[in-house]
Amino acid sequence: MGDARRPGLRGRSTARRALGDFEKIADWVEELGRDLPRRTDAELGALTGAYRERLAAGEPRHEVLMEAFATAREAARRALGVRPHRGLLLAGLAMAFGNVADLGPDEDGALACLFPAYLAALEGLRPHLVTVDDEQAERDATWTGPVHRLLGLRVGLLRPGLDHAGRRTAHRADVVYGGVHELGYARLHDDLGFHLTESVGAARAVAIVNGIGTLLVDDFDAEMFIAGPDEEGVEWSARERALAARIAALLDEGDHTSGPRGPRLLRPGIRKVRERLGGDALDPEADAVLLAHLHALLQPDPPPVLSRSEGTVPLDRITIGGFLRGYEALSGVSAGAAAQEALYRRVYALPVVAVPALRPAEGRDGPAVPDPDAFERRARYGFVLDEQRRALFDRVDRVDLVRERERPEEITEMIGEIVDDHVARLPATAGHAELEASLAALRGVCPISVTAGDLTGRGGRPLSGRRLAARLRAEVLAAYDRRERDLGGAVMRDLEKRVLRAVTHRRWRRHLAHMLCLPPALALLGFDEAASMRLYEEHAEELYHRMLGPLAEEAVGHLFGLEVAPD
Image 1 (spheres, rainbow, N blue to C red):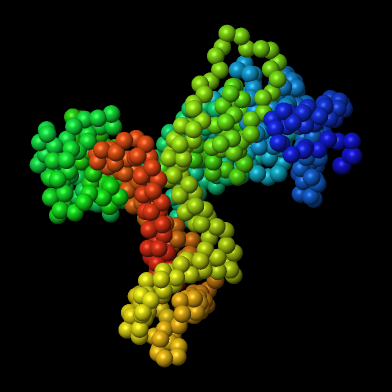
Image 2: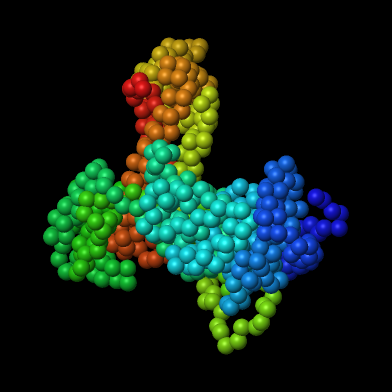
């Protein structure tokens, strides 16, 4: 238990101070490890249960950490015949406190990741040991997995080709090894699932990345897609492509040119396109899918738009960087990370701790270091959709966790947003007729009985905006509570989860299609890369917030209106 002599961790104002703190903790870990060789394997493994009990009882994490690290080090000596040296111990400490550890290129990153993974497993967090690819995941699991097993932990490995049951089993292990793509697609599939039985139950608490520089610097904006059939989306894209083909047939060589970002319309071409569309100015936001198809058709070998398989559209996507940013706690190890410290700090809020090399690396160049300002701009642009996706599906996940007797706060908020939107659309001089028309529109979403006469004050004028919104919210929530009493709490909670996930995915797919088509649309209209990045972010924000209102109305309308068949 507690010992006044044990070092604590001070605030990490600098990497040098953090390393000094870790050196002191490493001294204590080495001291605690002196008696462990006397224990049998069974006694060593039994410490795992004891540590878990202490953490569950509220003992400070850093108290258990020192003993846990000493135990993992001894287990590695027995299972692998290798005692992790002090540098690997320091790297493990850096990761356990949420840092990127910079290790030399010849150091064993998998062995360093063993320490924070064991600690997170003791906390019941089912950490993901993330690697650059599937082969590395298998190598790391084969190499360090026996250490975890010696300590009584279940080890899962995600391999390509695993069936659904195999994936669920792997994800329910105490420690999970996987390549970034296997883990990323598991996240996408979980979010697509409409019922818990369809989910593999991938944890989202802790990611410890062996080779974090490759994933967060080199490949951060590489995208992972799931495509599938969607009749509405396929028909919409086909209509836009057919119209784009008719427009392309009208264009002559002098109507467009080729630039670094592909075809670009010239003024005569823009005029022809506008005339074909009725004379209105081209809107890269509203016309994004049409313009993206036209951009493709004006190329000698037209690339696919939205999907590479006929009859499918993108259902979901995420970048590697966005996926890793979605974990509650992220850390990792990489050679040369100290040179890229500004990138980690500015884009990912991750400190870097440079661990002293056991032996100097000679004759090797460090990793390329992108310009921090340019990298930050690219990352901001690349993560726009990831951030929107996370905000949208976090709400769905929170509804999934609500207990039977609680109305989810998210549903209450959506009802408030619907009411506020209807009230905001009323003109300042609204009278009885305008108010009744607004109420009629609101009744199309939820069955309220209040009339315009109930919402007028002295002189026949409607209540003030704030009072009107408060009264209407109370009316809609009362109607919702009546609906819940009729169906029962358990049925209502299940209906909420299914409806919100289904509606969210349908609206998200349409938003995603717009956003994937926006870059080629902007390129076709002649915007350079810098202007396109700025406009992309602006349009993304506008389209996202424009999606939320209809999403809320559709979801709440279904929650009131769907017929629920008895079991």
